[in-house]
Length: 246
Image 1 (cartoon, rainbow, N blue to C red):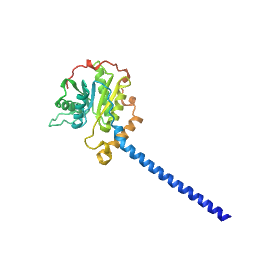
Image 2 (spheres, rainbow, N blue to C red):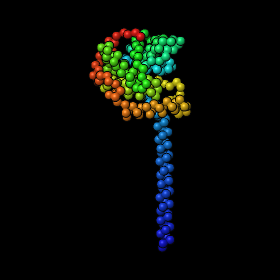
Image 3 (cartoon, rainbow, N blue to C red):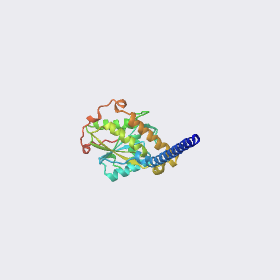
Image 4 (tube, one colour):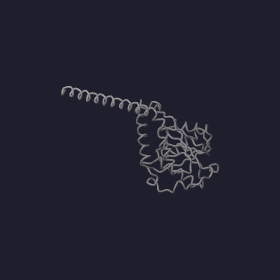
């Protein structure tokens, strides 16, 4: 009788152990499948394209020339009236020795690519070691306010996986009274649909995913700028935007 009870207890423990093993295997397989699925969609989450229908396009000037070419295409396809280029200081290119900004460099390039000079305006930002995108957004907002005008909608075009973070930061800078749309350029250094196959793709997407997480969890407008409340911005029409060169 005692031996039979021992055999039953052993059989029960063996059954529990086998069930636990299969449970862990299932969890591992399910987790791996979820990770693969998330990986395949990570880039497209980070690089949305949701334009607002605005007439004003904000171009992040630090993008590559091939990405700026895509901004030129968007300007023509969507019929924007004006472009504001952004970015902080950078050493001049093409043999020039005077320091210029990414904003000015991008403006020069867009005009050379055929955009009307009177429609492309550089809005440089000061040098900064962090929060550069948000600082550029604040400078764009201030430029519009100091012009005596504001807008009720803008579109921002940014580089691939950086786009969702730019979108979030411009929304913070402009507040709820301005609709902010986003356009994403196609990456030129890697394939967005298979970003994990190259080191530059993996580094970019993983970094941007972590940076976006930090932005959503910890970045706060009040701690990043002492500027006026973005929700106090008026909503004048962009059609009255003055012509400004350079």
